[in-house]
Image: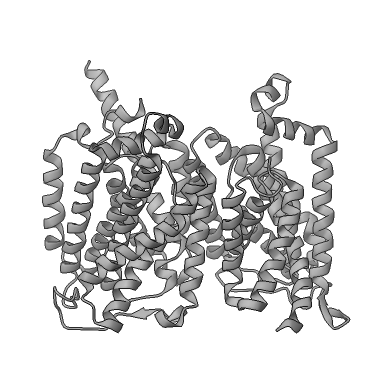
Length: 286
Length: 334
C-alpha cells in the first residue's frame, strides 16, 4: 500500500490543480457577490459537452475547444446574471441558494433531455497516454491540464490585481456603496465577475473532457469539490483556492489509497467540516 | 417587527373552520378517488408536509438553513428496518428508536456547528457536507446492505407490524395522522415561549442572547425536534416502500425537497410547508409519471425552471403571494 503513495501524491497533485481552476471561478463569484453558485458544476458539464460536440461534429481537439468553451460559458454566465442573479442579489441567503439550485437542476436535466444520460468519452484526443518517471506514471492529459490550470489561475490573479476592471471588482467586493460613489458601475462589474467565473470553469471543462467521461451528471461531483476548496481556501481568495485545490486533490487521492477509494469523496467533506469549524473564514480568507 | 406579521401563524388569515374542512377533505378524498397512484401521491404529500413542517422549525423559524435533513430521514428508515429485520423489534418501537438515533446524529453535526457559531452559508454547506458523508458511509456499510439497499422482511397485513399489501390506504391514514400531529405540535411550539425564542434568534441572535434567551439551548432543542420528526417520516417511508437504498433516502435531493417545499409555500409560516407540499408533490409525481419516462429528466427540468421563476417573482412563497392578494382585497373594500 505504501508503494502506491508516491503515485497517489503525483496524481492527486495534478488533479488538485484542475480542482483549483474549477474553484477559482466559484470563489470569485462567492467572494465578490456573496452568491453560492450551485450551477457552477453544471457550467463545467456544459463546457465538457462543448468540447465533446466540437470534437464529434467538427473534429476539433479539446485543446482547440478551450477558448470556445471559455467564451461559451462566459456568455452563458453573463446571460444567467442578467436574467436570474441580478434580480435576487438583495434577497436572503436561501433565495439565492435556491435560485442557483433551480438553474443547476434545469441545466443538468436539459442536458440529459437533449443528450441522454450516457457516459461519453473523446476517443482519440491529441493528449493521451502517460509516461513514467522513476516508476511513477504521469498522465499526459492531466499534466497538461494542470499546467494550463496554473497558467489560467495566475492570469486571473494578475487580472484582479493589475487591471482597472480587476481593481474595480475588488473595490465592489470590499464596499459596494463606496465603489458606486467612486463611479464604478457595480452592475457591470457583477456581470463581468460572473462571466469570468464561468470562463474559468469553461476552460476547466474543456481540459477535463480529455480524460474524464462526459455526462449530464458530471458537474455534481466537481461543484461539491469546489465548495470544499473555496471554504478551505477562503471565500474570494484566488491564492487560497489554488492551494486548497491541491490539498484536496492530494488528500483525496492519498486517502483513497489508505482508506479505500469508495471513501475519497467523504474524506474531502470531512476536511471541509474540520476546517470550517476551526477556521470558518478558510485558510486565506479575510 | 417580522414576528408579528399578519398571517404569520396561518390561522390569522382564514380562521379555524377551513382547517377542519380541509381535514375532512383529505380524509375523504382517497376514499372517493380509488386509484393507487393517487394514493401514492397523497402518501408522499403527507410525508413531505410532515418533513417540510419539521424542516421549517429550523430553516424557517430559527433561520438556520439545513441541507442535511436527509440524514435524519435515512436514519429513520434504516434504523426501523434494520431493527425489525435483524432484531425483531416492532416497527412502531423502531420508529421511536430511529427518531432517537437521528437526534444523536443531529447532535454530532449541531454541537460543533453551534459551538463554533456557524451561520448562513457556512451552516448550509456544513450540513450538506455532513449529509454527503453519511450517504457515502451507508453506501459502503455492508451490514445495512451498502449500495444494494435494504429489504424490509415481508409479513401479512398487520397494523402492529406496519405492513399493508392489500391497499395503500392504511399507510395514507398513518401518514396523515403524522402530518396532522406535526402541524399541531408546530402550532403549539410556535405559540409557546420556545417559538418566540426561535424567532428572536432569527431576527438578531446577539440581541436575543443579550435579552436572556438561552440561544444555544434553544437552537439545539429546535434542531433535535426537527430531526426526530423527520426520522419518523423516514421510518414510515421505509415501511411503505419496503425496499430502499442510500440514493433514495440519503440523497442531497431529499434534503433539498424539504427546503423547496417550505420555500414554495412560504417559510416561517405554519401553513407554508403544507401548501408547498400540496403544490410540489403532485407536480413532481405527475410530471414524473407523464413526462419522466426513459430517464430524460423532463420532470426536473420543469421543476428547476419553476423554481427559478418562483424565487425571482415570489421570494416570500405562494403564501406570501396569497396574503398580498387578500390584503389588497381588504384594502379595496376599505
